[in-house]
Length: 307
Image 1 (cartoon, rainbow, N blue to C red):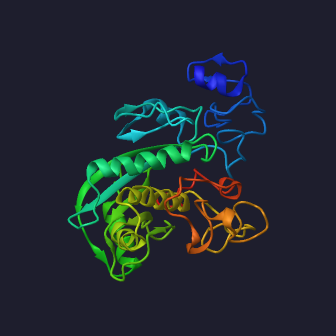
Image 2: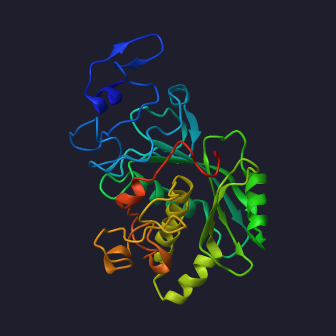
Image 3: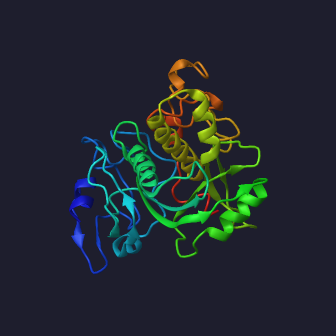
């Protein structure tokens, strides 16, 4: 109640089913309270007065948020503090939240240890909620399968089938992310497949062996690989919560042509942005969202679980 009232700065009345102001919906999402005072009527998403997402809400009902979920981590505020340490967590209608189901393959050289996986996911969650560079979203995760035998996928159809078989039906509001080995040709770093009316086969994959191969050729210190994996993870998750069809400024793969808005596609200032077009992105950069990407986020239609 305190968070919601602070969020909107309005008078509220208490009823049997909740606390809402006149004209407010139980699923309404407004300005992130991490931001400075603004106009709740127009500043509808994000940290420090970020542009609105494509749609209001996060598809979680107030009842689901009040009931809560068993989660392993995430939920950092805009300053990267006050994260969830694990266990039951009630969510809040005062924030936009994204829940992520994680599966991790084991038994290959580039596989992540539990500690490494936690560090990767923590960096992703911090990136999404960062008050300046983020997307105004508090990300929580649960590790569903922590040590799945590794598979080298021959093609996308096999990967999609694997995602379908390993998606937990009890986690229907969760985006699905898999830390996998690789495709047989050892490319790419990640892929995200959309769910649709005919097949429940959506999910995001981060291919650890492909990342490790290029990392070894880069000559960078070993400690640099974790940001590389975190950045790829955040990139693929973003694909699962975006809708850029027929939107100016994006290519056909949901990548932004000129994220810094200086009129030069692929310029030096574009390289650090999370969703920049092509293979020029700096994979070790901190998670950095641009306004075009923020404006196309739709948490009500997570591609890996909803259509």
